[in-house]
Image 1 (cartoon, rainbow, N blue to C red):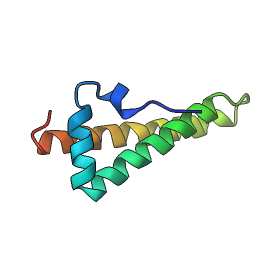
Image 2 (image 1 turned 90 degrees about the vertical axis):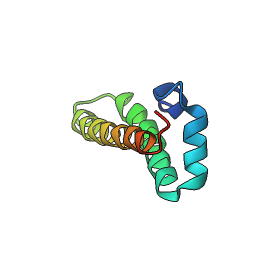
Image 3 (image 1 turned 135 degrees about the vertical axis):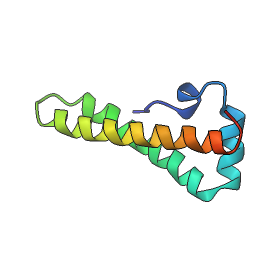
Length: 80
């Protein structure tokens, strides 16, 4: 199952993200982490049962933080 891709999250910044990922290994790792957690979030949300809800909330919080960090990196690089 595939999560939300960065090109959907930041539709007008695909080239800037690709450039920063090539130039900055930390930024690339943040993007990789976002994609992995996004995939996990969708996987957890498809599991029935109340035990998956707290996990989904924790993952969502982490995704929000990674999204914000990506946006800040784009701003610092003058790409946003």
